[in-house]
Image 1 (cartoon, rainbow, N blue to C red):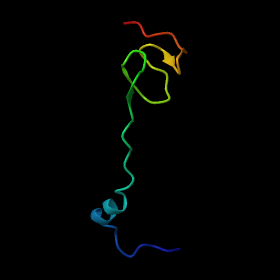
Image 2 (cartoon, rainbow, N blue to C red; image 1 turned 90 degrees about the vertical axis):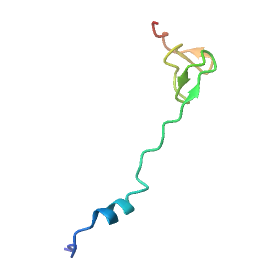
Image 3 (cartoon, helix red, strand yellow; image 1 turned 180 degrees about the vertical axis):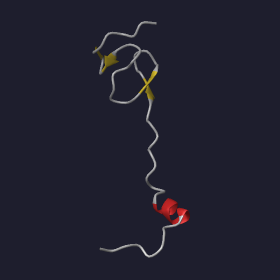
Length: 60
């Protein structure tokens, strides 16, 4: 079985893993109530998605 000859340094390890970061969460305004929501998700404030009410609106 292959075994590393030397320990991988922090610099080498971090350089190798630079592309493994989390992508920023995309948000957009709801066309009905203008609150911020994730695309292709039901609006948490008004409960609408694609012009139809899918869930009950959140109490204010």
